[in-house]
Image 1 (spheres, helix red, strand yellow):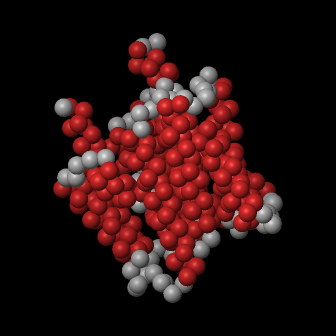
Image 2 (cartoon, one colour):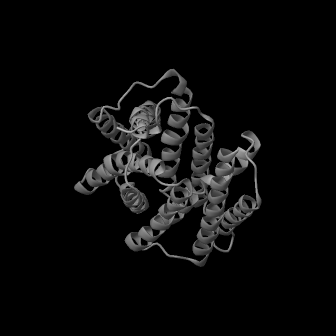
Image 3 (cartoon, rainbow, N blue to C red):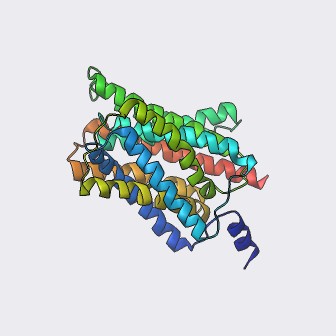
Length: 315
C-alpha cells in the first residue's frame, strides 16, 4: 500500500479512479436533483418534521453499517466535537427541516435553486470572518448571483401577496443561511476524523432535536402509509442521504476542487428539470433568468475560491 493510500485509509477517505469519480459525480447530480420533486410528492403523505426525522435516521443507520463493514467506524474525537454539533444543528437539522417545511408551499424547482444559493452567503462571511480575499471574479460572481436572487423575487414574477409562498421562500433562504454557517465552521475546523466518519454521528445527534420538534408540533399528525411513501423514504434515506453523502465526499477527495464545485451546480439544474418533467411545474422567464444568473454567479465564486486556494498553497 502506498503512503498516499495509507493516509487515505487512516482518515476514512475513499480513493477511486478519475473515471469512477466523474461517474459518482454524475450520479449525485441526478439523484439529488431528482429528489426535489420526490420530496415534494412525499410531503403529500407525511409531515415535514417526521419526513426529516426518517431521512436522518435511515441515513445514519446506513452510514453506520457501511463504516462498520469497511472498518472505518470510530467514536468522534474530542477535537471534532464542535463541528459535530454545529453541522448537526445547522445542516443536518436546520437545513433539512427548513427545506421540507418550505416545499409545502414552494415549487420544487424553485426550491432547488434557492437552497443552492449557499455559496453566495458563504463568500461575504468568509471575507469578513475568515479573512479571505475577494478578487474581481469573486466580486462579479457575487453581483451576478445576488442579481439572480433579486430577479427571482421581483414583483412581476413573484406573488408577494401570497403569505404562504412568501413564508416558504423565506424558509428556503434560512435553509441556505444555516448551511452557509455550517460551511464556514467546516472551513475553519481542523479535522481529526474525516467528514464521512463524522456524518452518521451528526445525523444521530440531530435526530433527538428533530424528534422533539416533531412530537411538539406534529405529534398528532397522520401519516398516509403506502408503497409509494415507503419507496420515497427509502430513496431519501439510504440513497439520497447515505449513498449520496458518501459519493459526494469521495468525489471531493478524488477530483480537482474546481471540477467538484462546478459539477455540483448541476444539482439545482437537475432539480429544475426533474420538477418540470415530473410535476409539470412551469419554466417561467423569471425562473430561467434567475437560475442563469445564480448559476453563473456561483460558478465565478467557485472558480475564484479555487484560484485563491491554489495561490495560498503555492506560497
